[in-house]
Amino acid sequence: MRLVIARCSVDYVGRLTAHLPMAPRLVLFKADGSVSVHADDRAFKPLNWMNPPCTVREGAAEDGTAEWTVTHGKSGEKLVLRIEEVLHDSTHELGPDPGLQKDGVEAHLQELLAEHITTLGEGYTLIRREFPTAIGPVDILCRDGDGGTVAVELKRRGDIDGVEQLTRYLELLNRDPALKPVRGVFAAQEIKPQARVLATDRGIGCLTLDYDALRGIEPDTPRLF
Image (tube, rainbow, N blue to C red; front, side, top):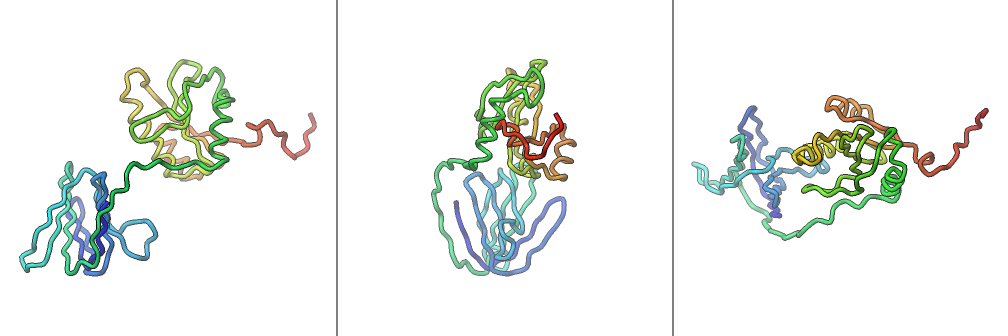
């Protein structure tokens, strides 16, 4: 990863146009080919970015100032950075990332759902937990009562990011002729309304999990039976 802190302006040239005036900013060039421009007041969200694949050409503008052009390899869209002053420029080798470690409850949810796979529906059978893909493991891969393949993404609290993650897994899994067609189920103890709407729009099922019920713990609420 290359980290550049520079006083620069940024122009986006593509389907729309956008301009960031000259100011100090952090520019990240990541090994996956992405480039993002950050300010100091937006948490993790970049001001502008270019998804991979893209190329970077470092040259000079007509007035002699440095000009870096980031071009997307498929769309041809561009980010043009005019550099007035470089305050920091360093490159670091981060190496392979071990991935996100799930917290105890989320990991236990996965174990419990795999053990009680018919929570998803009658006739469901487990293929594998942590089914490997090129972009990370799918929490649970199973088959439904009709023999169809189902990929399950598990979260404690299900939001839009989890739906996006499952969408990427489904895209990859459906390229495998031995598995396709693969449908998705987004399972969580709590699913946010926006995530449910997005999942439904993409043909992904939603399942709200009762952690205590999976563990076999009776509810505190008195019952008449």
